[in-house]
Length: 544
View 1 (cartoon, rainbow, N blue to C red):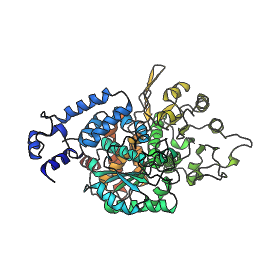
View 2 (tube, rainbow, N blue to C red):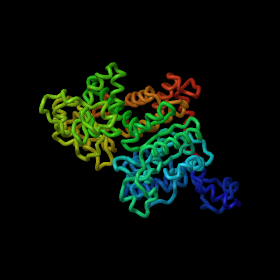
View 3 (cartoon, rainbow, N blue to C red):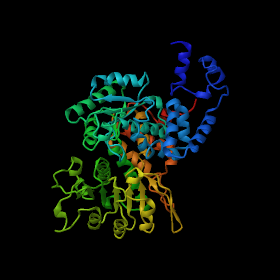
View 4 (cartoon, rainbow, N blue to C red):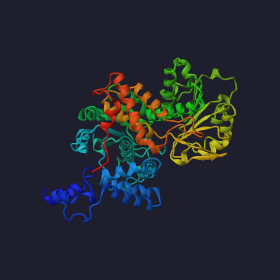
């Protein structure tokens, strides 16, 4: 490689490139003289310039496209910009803005953005591809998806790689995890989306999804290779389908530090929101009656997490399970239904619990029969929490907790302002999408966003910093309690969760709690006396 090639390689390396911030001395040293405009900018000047460019773009897709260009060219600038405007940029960089990007990923493809694309048709390439993607970097965190259940928009195959890239952006912006130590991966096992298979521009495999033994062998080979190539790796599974997510988590959770955001992350953030709500009402978790609408991977994962917490607070397994009701397409789920998943069977009810003739075939009828105190939606059925349903729930509960968690916006079960208005300001609300504060009868109600980004970055940072052998139930519980403890219940209209704008600060607090719990359980491989200092020392700063 000649001098000019090395110079341009530096300018095209997003982990090393400073762009116009290369000093005069660096330009001479690295052969960049004359390859950049002469004025040397500071990082902050670059940030201000980039921010003006973002604001000048009117649509979210246009803003995201500009930001992704910066990400592809200069990680330090991107993350300094993201950190300074985290609340504003989160819905652009991640959900809901990422949904449109995923739908159009193949058509707009320009650069692989340091992701690794693994094909079920070429399992022999897995090890080589992972090494090539790492390119000599010390990989500590890997987010992997197979693209089967992206957000609420379904199977997008290789287009779903953006969800892995986006998740890792949040890890760095929120928790300071070094972007050079992360790797996004997509496992392409095919797709069931006909429009992709018929699209000549689609960049993934053009055949239907492979399942069964071949699928699990593919994932096994990937996990084994990744954990062998990158010792101590923290492995994050994202947006796997209902038939695979729980099985894969169970398959690896006792061998490696692995995390499934849809099962565990959504469960932790929802539990944290419930605990935050209970700190406002002064009630006990053990006295709540929980109704889940949408009993898929996320819904059942939340139920299992909250049930485990009830057991830890003193209820027997049988007593805890009796507090939960699952409603899906069939209505209330009963244990004699033939098509239940293993996760649904665990919480399905017996018909003898209800008087003969009781109709619980719809959400509205189930709410009327059960009178829940907590209603959580993971159904992707937009508008499902109607005024009549909400008022029925509020008639039997002084401070109903109502969490419409589905996203993007058009799939949310209800809007926060409607829930506040329909309950006369009594509802404790968390939403899956960002919601503006609601003013009602002179009180401003802050609306907590049950965004997994409030949890998973700090959880990952604490696990990575302590070099934990596994991610335990105790570490997960420590994360939820740490987050709920940040809520100020004395504030009129207080939110049940802290704001995304404080993400970086409380991610550090959460990480320290997770690291301390890892040490308490003897799972840490890093020796440390002070978990707070351990976490601070582990964080990467976006600076030249």
